[in-house]
Image (tube, rainbow, N blue to C red):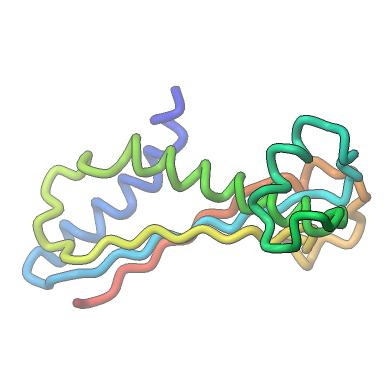
Length: 138
């Protein structure tokens, strides 16, 4: 079922690649993860899992913002990992893709959509990953 989620992305990229078969292309896929501003207690499993990924002194207690940034980064990385698993190599003819680059970024507690003005601290609309892709001539 997870493959079906990425199917539209794979089809869109495949369509573009087939449209320009004579041009060598570079493909960049970026995932941007977001988190809400819910407090993550330092005694929780999630805090203990995310804390080592931060580049702060080992003795320092991570702020909620730092932990939520690590969480959003982990979300984005997970989406990229799943995308790689379920789409790479699935193209009928990806011969003209010379360079393939996957990027992920955690945006933390920033709002994913600045047009939405009624976000709450614990808002599921903030716990998302946005996926972007760009295709360039090589």
